[in-house]
Amino acid sequence: MARVIFYEKPGCKGGTRQKVLLTAAGHEVITYNLLTEPWTVERLRSFFGDRPVSEWFNRSAPQIKSGEVVPEQLDEQTALFLMLREPLLIRRPLLQVGDRREVGFDVETVDAWIGLKPVDESFRAMSESLMSQNLQGCAHGNGHSHDHHHDHQGGCNHHAQQEHR
Image 1: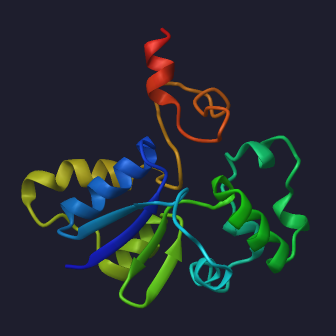
Image 2: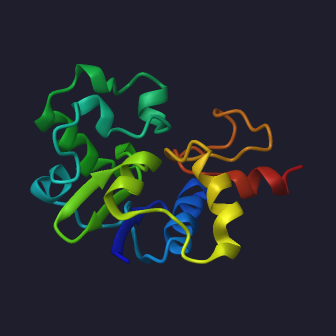
């Protein structure tokens, strides 16, 4: 079982599902707030590997949705500068196990890397259900459209939506 360093936006339901899946597989999950972490260019860059710059970004961030930031038009240095200035632009989660670092939560990648098979038979149905979902970023279900469940800061606002109903 692995010790997973998990950088997230606290309260995001998608992140919660990802952590449940990791925990059910027997991993120890250590969470940090991605938005308040004191990032450096070098440290942040280490999570993106050889992915294209456009895959480094949180597509739900207000600056991206508004067209103010267009990831496909940015070079590496500009992208990193913008992310350090506005951490909501960073694709979540950032994951680290040992010396390996990854961005996003692609079930197949994470499963091949550290394993996502539940350690206890009682977790199997839940884990299979979670693994069948798109766990890339913020997902709420319940028919919420993508534009309506994010608050003005580009974060999850699922609970506020429920309270207003």
